Image 1 (cartoon, one colour):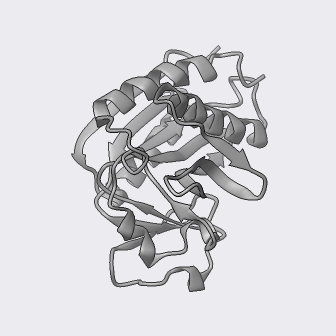
Image 2: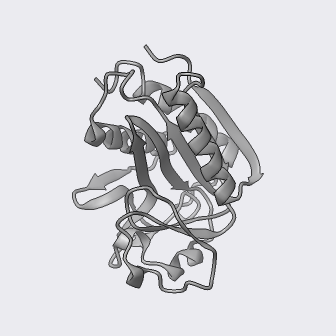
Length: 216
């Protein structure tokens, strides 16, 4: 059975290359059984990342913010201040949970359950990665992105939830390759939750969704 998961909440903005180094180091430690599983909550300065399925044409403005190759699945996404990024490093093999689809579904359910705490109905759509909501205009918009990588059944990368980011920053890319839907945030939906409130809700619902037996 997996040991207790370590939780870290970083203050300020964490540079993307440093985050990648830290994740790589922790994944190596988990594989060597010298470090515990880890959930790391943080914010990045404004930047774009490209996944393994990213299309060059979806990077509309390559000069607006730094662009990093993430090594995760998926396409282009944005990270920035007031967006909660959660990097999740779990050992699916030791959890007897070697099912990538089930893992992604649990990440999505984690977000959906957390949104419900704030009275927001989140949902998924076939063929559209991430979690969606009905925005203020009544249209479907993405509020959270999911992008993962798995090495020898240890996960990294994870989710990003829009709390109160500058949504205009998304105009430099086609988010996740989907150009006919918008993006939104808790603030745009009228939910004035602090990052501390969001963090507490995320931790509460993570522990409900990712119990040691929940992925089996």
